[in-house]
Image (cartoon, rainbow, N blue to C red; front, side, top):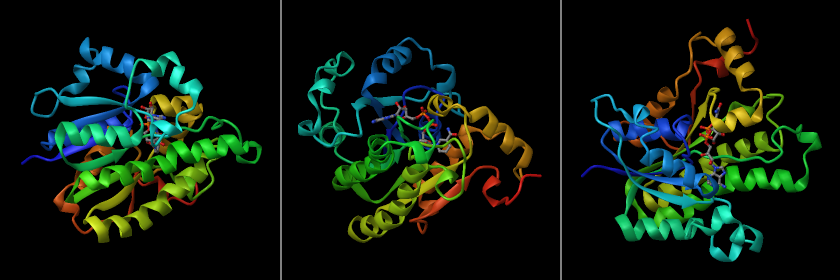
Length: 286
Ligand code: NAI
């Protein structure tokens, strides 16, 4: 039987989530997607109208199929958590069952089980503010959307994950070393995510035989990254200073995710794996 993957955090064909979906599909996995509710309409419309067809092409020439797209907002665990203004917001009112518990329940009803869970989402409303100028609300929002969202997804999907399965999230080196401009508590959120990767690897490994890893990816000009504002500078810095002076392709992160999710990585858990042309190993720019 082929493996089944649920990938949270795809809303276009530019980000790491899409590339991971493609690499998993190329390896034979069935693809389910969780898309942020406010982005759902345009993503589904674009899919339907063939806007992504060119980027759906897999190495064997076939097109990646997405078995189902689920609306998801990973900052809410259950309907009781959703405040009135979100409930009645017209971008949310058109969709239903998009809290984490409800999505896990729907996937269970539709497909029974999954083998691979991918968390490729982050949000920090104050990301352009330096950490020292970040509000409590902004900081907690970054942690909620970018770190706790992974705990919540794992918690609610674990009961429907087949033993031997794997989870993957995406992190950034700003967790460990100073990247001026990655503010709003996003550096803190990634530090939490990396630490949680270890603790959750223990808990999910012992209880469910599930592996938990995170990929520390180099800079990519995704939609989320463009919102931060310094992504072109980071890409150029990497091109100039990394051991491998080449563009970093989203596909390279996708392929690493496919490896980590496969039996080839059966002894790897609790790891932060760098996919960044080696930039993390440099101490100074040259
Ligand atoms: P992206 O824009 O393709 O992906 C982020 C996704 O998160 C979007 O689809 C957005 O709709 C979704 N999202 C935001 N809030 C959400 C919520 N509450 N519930 C559900 N979905 C929500 O951008 P990218 O850059 O591919 O991001 C994917 C992951 O990669 C993130 O964790 C990011 O921090 C990480 N990363 C990105 C790097 C880059 O340079 N682009 C570098 C290192 C890590």
